[in-house]
Amino acid sequence: MDRYRLAFGHRWVQGAGLFLAALPLIAADSLWIPPYEYPYADVLSPAVYHQRRQQLLRSLGPRSLLLVVAAERHLRNGDVYYPYRQNSWLWYLTGIPEPNTILLLSSEGIQVQEQRVHALAFIPERNPRHERWEGARMGPVEAERLLGITALPRSAFDSLLLQILATTDTLYLLGLPTPLLRLPVSGRPFSIEQQETEWLRERFPQLVARRGFPPLVQLRAQKDTAELRLLRRAIAITGEALQALWHTARPGMSERDLQILLESELRRRGAEDVAFPTIVAAGPNACILHYTNGHRRIADGDLVLIDCGAQYAGYAADITRTIPISGYFTAEQRTLYNIVLEAQDSAIAACRPGVPFALPHQRAVAVLERRLRQLGILDTGSNVRHYFPHATSHHLGLDVHDVGPTDTLRPGYVITVEPGVYVPPGSPCDQRWWGIGIRIEDVVHITDNGAEILSAAIPRRPEEVEALLHVNRP
Ligand code: GLY
Ligand code: MN
Ligand code: MN
Figure 1 (tube, rainbow, N blue to C red):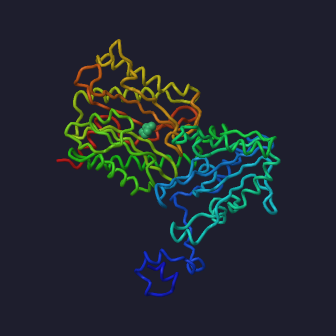
Figure 2 (figure 1 turned 180 degrees about the vertical axis):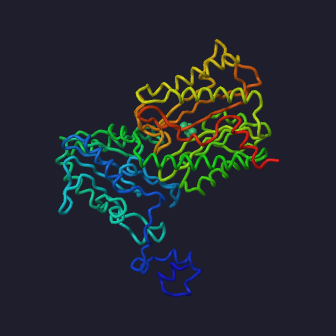
Figure 3 (figure 1 turned 60 degrees about the horizontal axis):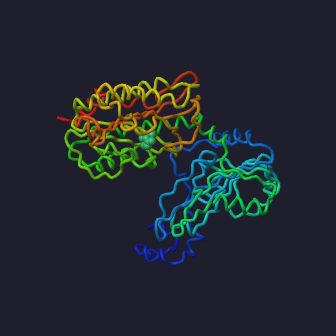
């Protein structure tokens, strides 16, 4: 209620919030602007962003401009929006969390008052009327103060861009909304990129516009010290939350119960969000790779596959553990669990700089193929892809499936190693295997001469998992 007292200066208006909210906020505009606080607990130093931009500028040819557009806000209905998340390009280069922002990186520099800058952000100015509804926002002043980037009001962008483009030969565009839409009635394609390119071509015939900028993909793949710290924190939070969940998970709970418990444990430890929709899949649901339905009541004897990750200061964890809800693996579950573990150990052992990106996957497949054949699950007529239909590794960073080259592993890469075996009911093998789904997913950092498992503290051996499940159980 303090807000209303401040705004109107009358005690009698307290409690009349809804009515007041509908009034034009004339007086409020001049009286109160909420203080701005950066929404993420961990703020990187301006020097980190500066260094990334400098590194990128060194790869930008003469008369070149990199233009990064912020993620769009997505309307859910009426005036209600989906939670906003900045796109990872802009996040990586600036840390600015605001929509309607644009970043320019210019090889030639842009004159802003007395100085020539190579990085310039355009951010909507603060607006007390909007902020009464939606809370404080970062404006150009806050961006300069907190993140150390030269910033102008978004309204200055249009005219300045036209001047800059007149002396630009190559324009790299990043963050454009969904590149290709299908119009819903006619089915005709509509390309935002094409529309923008045509607009540019008409006005600036000398200009070559390109989508994306490969040096930025390479830079994002090779994690810097600041990123490794945030990734370690996201992974530690996720590991602690998983173990807290193991202490409380019991048969009779629903998959959704476990999801909610896990996510509250993540948030209690500082995660601002989940990095992707949490997967809690019990029994045969574990054979559905990205299962999120959540309705199954977990039965005695079920395996539960939990694939989850905190988002911490923008960075994603991505960990999977598969646990026997009753506290012990059955013989069949243990057999398959151990071959997934063996495949994972073999894949992790292959992680080192200079080898093909696909090598850990090939190692995992080789183990699974051999073991499934020995068990008679895979016969000569069937393919291992029936039981292991996904890849073993992807880059991890600001995005759960992060950008990065997939030719060779290089120092600084952070990748997942996540083999699995899934035997959907009805598979061409003995019925005793049906309905078992297991994935074990860890995160590996490729170092100068080998690899480091960033998630090593999260137990994954079957005896360790069982021991943790027995804590708090009679
Ligand atoms: N959580 C999605 C994945 O493991 O790739
Ligand atoms: Mn995962
Ligand atoms: Mn993954």
